Image 1 (cartoon, rainbow, N blue to C red):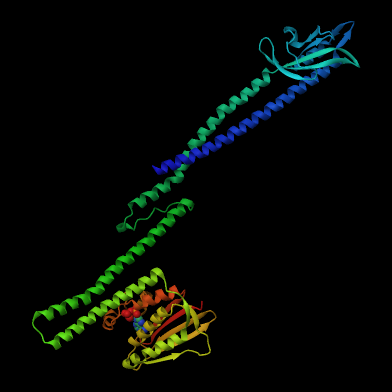
Image 2 (image 1 turned 180 degrees about the horizontal axis):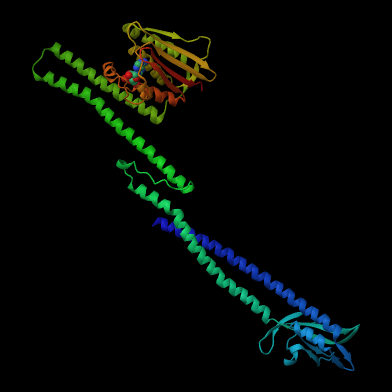
Length: 456
Ligand code: ADP
């Protein structure tokens, strides 16, 4: 309905504009034509008057004109009444003989429009009939206007027929073209109508030329693809979270049932409660990590402050030394002291990222292995690498490592307590700093995570 309306509106506007243009053109054309005709009539009258002045012969009160001159004037459509100085009619030229002298005539050298008794429109010109300085009378010259007026009417009639015809054709052609041009819009509307949350795989048929509407359809399809991906991610996330929560909840439920199944001693109950607390802790960690990820992805980071990255890394390394000692892994730092490692960033989130990377290094490195932290600066970028000589990651996992809930070795990771969210959080935080995080790994050789951050 709307589309039909738009089509009609388009055509109506075009036709209205054309009508204004055509009518203006016709008006100007007729106006110029009339002016030209007027000039020509006046010229003919004046020429006729000069000619008559030269050829009227007055002898003994007799006014005569040579027959050839009369024929010439008549051929040009002119007629004339020649009056004596007393105002008596002395001679008529052309068809003037058929009519009396018009009642109203213009003053000397003036023109006037009038009509003959048979309603023929004429233009009159009055000039004195002179020979040298002698006035021999008056010439009243007339030119019938019927031919020129008829011509003007014909032109007007031509416009009156041609303009509506042209507008009609233009409306039909416009409607046809508008219909063709707007047909893809109908396809887009149709597709949009079919789309629901459960059916985001619909796309507009893309056999369209690369014009504005083709581009619109393409953009619409891209938007649908993005929506579909986002929707799939959300669905995946919901199922991942449910899955992750089910295990600790199930264990909690089992512990509770066990505890209630028969009377137990306080010590046994305490052990059970400790296990239950661990399950609750695990769920809390999951929820906290999810919240962190959602906050960073949706709202970005907190206020950026100057951060001395070298100090931050050394501090984290110091904090993790006891853990490294427990795991029997050597943790060492290789950061040049004379380089400026200041950057603008969210200190707390950066601490979280590097802590996670170093903890992963410790986690996936066997006893007597080592984890090292390196930092370097290249112009406006600071690069931090966490290198471990651990078990490494197989190549097929590498492209997915930064996805939410992705674990390269789920059995082991679950053992070691991770949800596969640490690297996703790291990725989101680094991205929010306009930085990049990459991984290099070889099975059996170890893994290197490299974080590049812009200084400002
Ligand atoms: P998790 O909390 O499970 O460690 P992460 O997002 O931090 O989650 O890591 C995702 C997965 O990547 C881990 O489960 C592990 O399989 C793998 N991984 C991460 N860091 C290392 C590493 N330094 N060495 C080997 N594997 C690693």
